[in-house]
Length: 148
Image 1 (cartoon, rainbow, N blue to C red):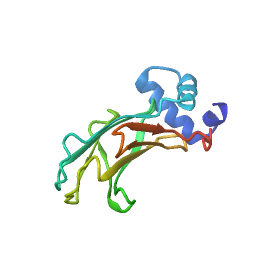
Image 2 (cartoon, rainbow, N blue to C red):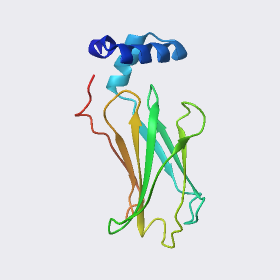
Image 3 (cartoon, rainbow, N blue to C red):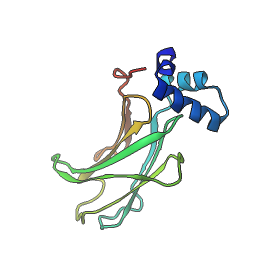
Image 4 (cartoon, rainbow, N blue to C red):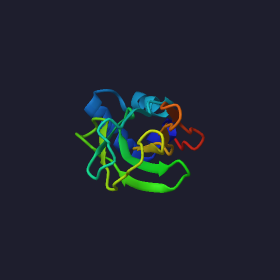
C-alpha cells in the first residue's frame, strides 16, 4: 500500500476517491488491495436474440470499475459478438450492453455469455461466465498479477 501511495498518479487517485467516500486514502488503498472486485450479476432476462436487446451487468469494486467487456460465443467457441458495456450512472456498478447481432439460437443452451471487468487501479480482472449446461455463474478472480 505504501508503494501504491508513493506513486504520484495512484496517490492522487486514492486521495480524490477518499474525499468522495470521506475516508482516509491509506485505508482505501488497503481495502482496494485486499479485494472488493466482483461481478454480482449477468442478467439475460431482456435478451431474446434481437438487435437492441439489453444485457445487464452489476460490476463493483470499492474504488470503481473502469471497463466492462461482454462476449457472446457459440458452444463450439465461435465468437458471435463482443462489445463494451456502458455504466448507467457514475460509479453505480450498473452496466448495460446492447446486442448488435441477430441470434436465432437458444440463449442458454446453444451459446455462452461472459463479462470481464477492469478495476481502476489493480492490474487484474474478474471474469464471470454463464454456463450453458448448469445455467450457473462462476467467478474467477486472478490475483497473481496485482502490482501495488
